[in-house]
Image (cartoon, rainbow, N blue to C red; front, side, top):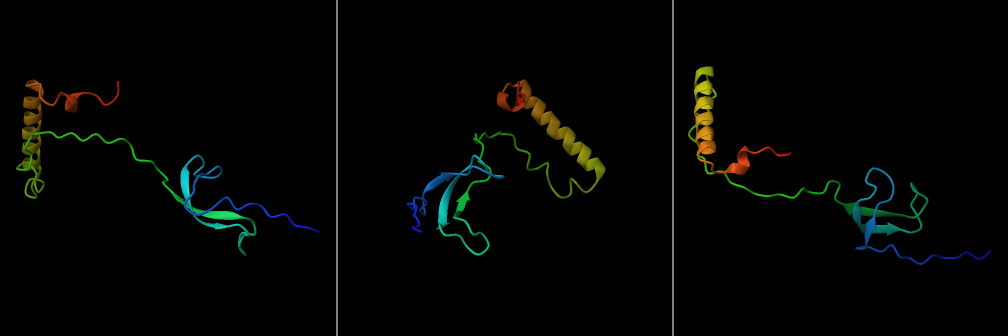
Length: 111
């Protein structure tokens, strides 16, 4: 009986798309291919590496309100200091809102 050999097209550093399982539809790169299988897996398979969760688009903004003097370890030590710090932070945010600066900060994320 003559056995046919398949062409080895799954080579290291090739990009593949995972078709089944938890990461189906994700892109991956072949690290090592096992065309003849192993003892645990007697079928041809590949060791792949990819990204399980793609990063979201990041837009960096800065808010030029100085709140460093509000947040200290002593501030969070007692309830009175915490309440007064919260009121002061609120007042600074309200002042920023009334002057119409940093409008993006005060708008809703989704419409």
